Length: 95
Image (cartoon, rainbow, N blue to C red; front, side):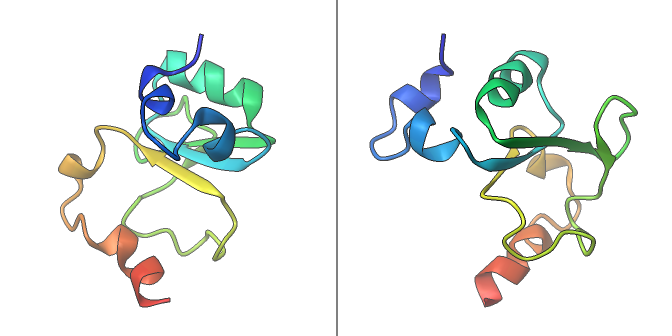
């Protein structure tokens, strides 16, 4: 079973986005995490407060992450909890 949204977005298929890619997943949901871990070549989970994630990481201050280190960053239901929600994207927009 694939994640439904990946199957219904033109050009954004699960295969293109995840399979064989390096994925960073913030506030990982258990079911989605299970599927991504199976298909990604590298799968890292991150959360600001959870001890269940691989990394403790603030999405608005990711200075420890190298540019282009991940092919895909997933943050479902996360940005509405971030005080400065534009900051996580500033580096990629300026590049």
